[in-house]
Length: 365
Image (cartoon, rainbow, N blue to C red; front, side, top):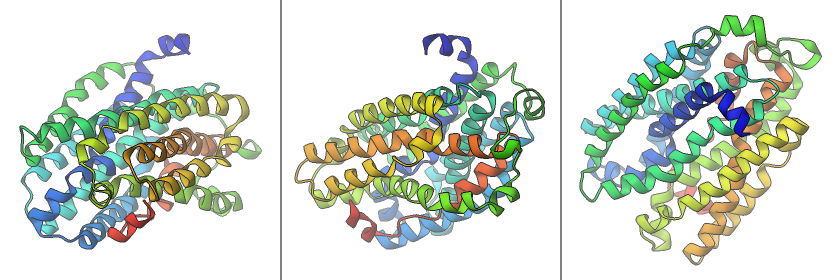
């Protein structure tokens, strides 16, 4: 693993930074400010959930078309659009006071962060690496894990000295600071067309499947139920964390202090699942990753203390760790990498509609 990291440090670091930068558009970060947003704009739990669902669904629809750009343009070209767009969304959040404006801001955060930054990182890793795809994905997706581990606690702590709006300005600055670093790391990046000629891998039947080919094949529709639930569960896990903490009678600072252990479980399983995918293929992990999720939510539903909540988070982290690698490896292995950007954009958005809509969503927590 260390030899692999040293030999591919620039590309792996770029993937890591991109996944970390997607944090500003991830549910776990946005939901940290749910209470302040609802109070200042005058939203209920239900209306906030509905607004979030509408904005996220709109970004998912746009991603179906925008995601194909990762098949046609260099990552370094796209990041010059994606990261400034994400920084702008953070700045707009810091000055927005209207419901309509909030819909636009959430749309931009979800599209540029959770959508394009994640898409750009994961598709690039799957395309640049073949025999070591699982390892590459497991390393790059550590950016998701690091963001999840440190940003909630860091920004909750910043609220002691800054207003919640000022913290979004900090997020915008952090987003912009990584742009020159990424440009330097990707100086030698090949274009997707060059990669297609040199290093593309065919899928089932030795074919390079297009998005329409995939959607006409029964395997895709049989896989959708397996792919649908876990991302929605991950959204609920963090979207309702403020409501969950209130119901349990804990403090937000005390609850977010559990996240580093959750991330340890997530990171461990991310690396382990990456190794297993490289050795045994993606099908093995595709059949397993919903079990720890279900167990984790069951434990959290009945958790009488933060200790039990931690156990639930660890189980969810195991499921999340497998989820970091399995879907992208599955689509690369079975449908090839030539049109992976278009395929992943369509497949990802097909399961992006499972969103919480209000406090009732927290019942499963």
